[in-house]
Length: 138
View 1 (tube, one colour):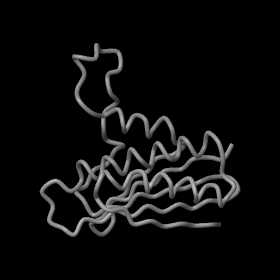
View 2: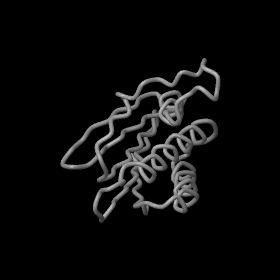
View 3: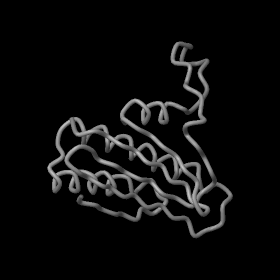
């Protein structure tokens, strides 16, 4: 199974480099089309959330690592960071029926990740958040 790893600086300016890396890794492994689009969007959202929220008030060094494992059936991404614990599975679904001006800020990114991926799993291990995202190659 081809596997890839990228360290991402905790800076929004890193997002284009991250997206390019995902596309190159997928291309090398023969992953194409909608799978690449959904995977890129979900990983971008997860990393953006880490950059914007996970390190608030936490002393450096701040670390973000993204891994991709690709086999014939699926792509498994893992976003690992040493920020504050946050389990996205505990986040409430956003109220999409409410008028825009009455909705709470945020929450749509997690909703997007849940809809784009086939499996989303969170674990906190040894002071690190580990968000595992799986997308089937169908």
